Length: 97
Image (tube, rainbow, N blue to C red; front, top):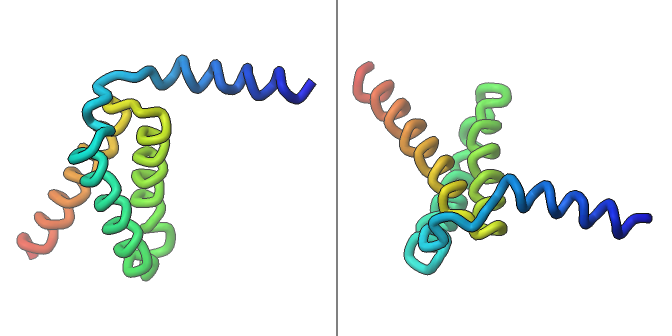
């Protein structure tokens, strides 16, 4: 029965994502997350000089999209920290060389 499979999959997602820190998925933080997705999307094409270099950014965009869909702020915090780490590493490599 196809409907039962969808419900079971929905329960699995609901157990992984619970609505924690919902304020991180509301208006000002939501706009920041969406702008981050746009900026990462624009950056991905330049990173394709190195094969699969854009995959980390694509994974971050996927995690942000899943967090916004589930309205889970704690899940949105993890890719936000990853973006900060990526930006810090890149900045250190540019300034250090």
